[in-house]
Length: 93
Image 1 (tube, rainbow, N blue to C red):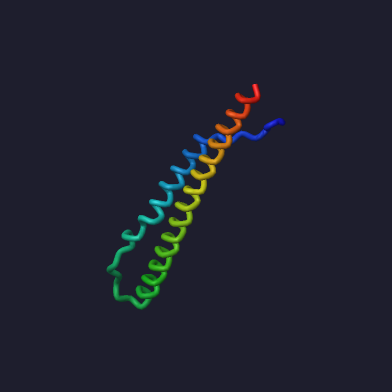
Image 2: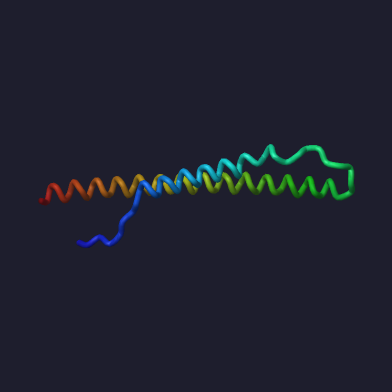
C-alpha cells in the first residue's frame, strides 16, 4: 500500500484559526454602523442597505466559523487515522 497523500494537520489548524479570526471580524461589524443618519430622503434607504449588509456579514461570519470547525474536525480525523496506521505498522513489523 502506497500513500501519496499527506495532510499537514498543524497547517490545517493554523488555517482554522485564521478562519475563526475572520469570522470574528465579520460578525463584530454589527456595532460599527452608525445609528444616527441625516434626515435626507436617501438616508432611510441607506440605513436599510447598511442593516442588510450587517445581517449578511453576520451570516457570512457564522458560515466561516462553521467552516473553521470543519477544518479542525478534518485535522483531528487525519491525526487519528495516522495514529491508527502507526499502530498497525508497529503490530505488523
